[in-house]
Amino acid sequence: MTIEVICPLYNAEKYVANLDKAIKKQKEVDIKKITYVLTKSTDNTEEILKEISANYSIIEKSEFSHSLTREKIAMESNSDILVSIAQDIDIRAENWLFELVKPIVENEAEACFSRQIAKFEDIEKYIREKNYPDKSYIASKENIEKLKLKAFFFSNASSSIKTDVFKKIRGYDGKRLPINEDMYLAYKLIEKGYRIKYCAESVIYHSHKFTLKKLYKRYYDTGKFLKENSYLDKYGTNKSGAELAFYTLKRAIKDRNGKVLLQYFPNMITRFVALKLGKLFG
Image 1: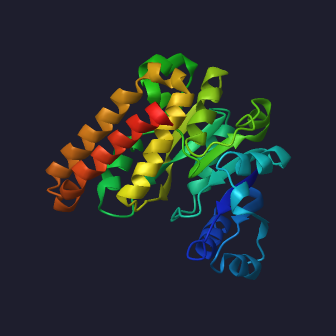
Image 2: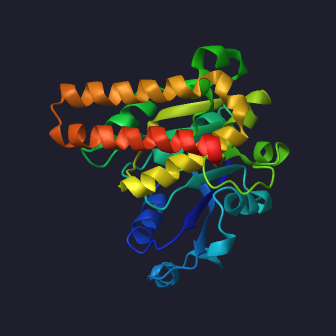
Image 3: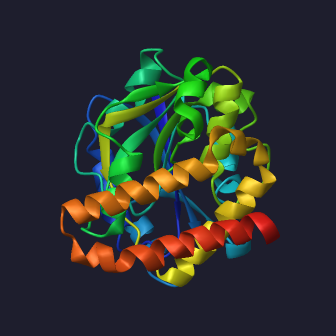
């Protein structure tokens, strides 16, 4: 099956050359196209894209949307599989893409996402451990009661989907989603009877370094998303957050990770308050 890789970019000069090289090193896959969408930047990203002879387009900052930017490219694609990635992922293995699309090729699932491992020994190390375990699983309508909210866990930092399925379900329905577009898509897939595989063998390294201000904004937007998509509440949105917080604390104590223990309460309180306020006022 042919593959189109879609990657939005913004001020990506420190990522794009190595990212492009890592994609092109992937083995046993048929990459038909790598499409970059560059939001007008203040660094040298465009010059680097020219140097590597990349296929790219440029959009204004006001045009960018996590959902619509990807949806536009996807709807025009004539490849069999769409792969969505983020600019700041670190691809170290040459089988990352093969493992990400293999379940689709073998008709085991219609969409997949990769395991993410944190780059640093900070709080995200434990969050990613919890969210991205070392064992694969398939989410479907049949096991939704068992998986609860985990059934809709999906990440466009590294994901794949059959192109015809994406088009058939109308992608993101033309919605300008500021966050959680991947969860929105996953819910639609599961509800319409499709299968999503978490591929623990497809590994990327990915971390964020959020200030408390940025973390607040992220979780306020998440709260707003959950308010607008309140049907997700019946799958345990609050319980899922509590389990993640408890796991993170337990692992930090076990590792005697003083740095994380100092971060823990300000970080988790910020998440909790922002989420609640987003649900109330977003």
